[in-house]
Length: 299
Image 1 (cartoon, rainbow, N blue to C red):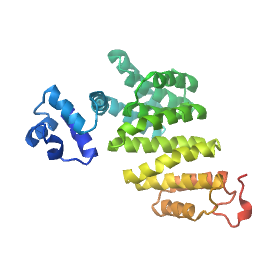
Image 2 (image 1 turned 90 degrees about the vertical axis):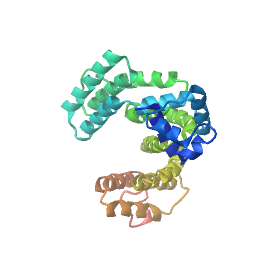
Image 3 (image 1 turned 60 degrees about the vertical axis):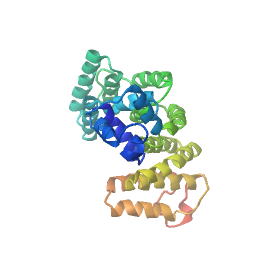
Image 4 (image 1 turned 120 degrees about the vertical axis):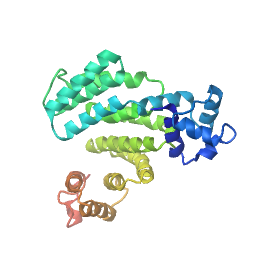
């Protein structure tokens, strides 16, 4: 991928056209050629473009590196698909392929993918080269701690490895992520990553009945769900938000909660609908939908 293509994605994510960005720096046609990989501006003009886009050169290079690795993306997608299909042999095979790529390139991202595959295998009782989930977490945690500035890669990494962390560690790194989010508020891909990460951490908090922290993350996830225009994400985040409010006794009205669940059912997201019903029964009512307030089980 050309560096100009990354510039194009950033520009579009900020809702800016080529004329706006190029004004006072270069012609619109040269910007178009740059974005198409047919022209490369001098360093001074590149810095001016980045200033117009409110990005630093360092941020651009990290974003470009993350967007321009088709092999890494392909391996990641293969791991995800194998995990979703419970294809443990494919998981093992792809994990080993990632390790081989790491050994040949020295790129941390491939080692992280290897760890991801190994972690999923452990989670489902199919241990391979790594036997304990703590071994995976003990590699990822120092990496996240040692990185001075987080970029999109670190947000994705944390989200991918949440299942290996304790709830305390998930909350700790989640709060760090919230602190780091601001610089990426205009980047469309970042909003989706942030929303998923915040929602997943809130779920961990909810499972531990740490409702205050769950609310902390959900309050930040909801506006992002609105901005991503992903209906499913918005509904699921809203369900968890309503559950948390009731658990904190900040609300006793479950009308919205029932409505969100009904929408999931109508849209035929039955797996999610069933799973969320179980969450409601665990945290709110032994019988859901409730017939009477007498079955409320929170304390």
